[in-house]
Length: 100
Image 1 (cartoon, rainbow, N blue to C red):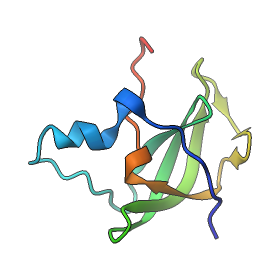
Image 2 (image 1 turned 180 degrees about the horizontal axis):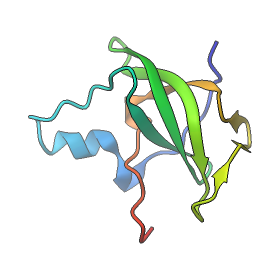
Image 3 (image 1 turned 135 degrees about the vertical axis):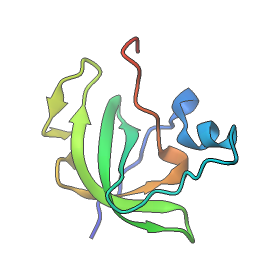
């Protein structure tokens, strides 16, 4: 079973918006891909186990939680390394640049 997470809105880091600029790119995740999202100010990386095309959701395991200072955490609020989560495409985020 997966843990329900209220992901932060990706804002200008939206993967969907990025791919919309070039229709030749395929944003569909595959098993084994590592996706990023934002959760309560942290970057969360998810290892995709499956993708549900009908509702545009990746299901995978949390493999990293990184705070705003670049520190890796074992947990943050309700989320911890190893949790299985659902990540909707509209919540996927680009990794922050080193200036952010």
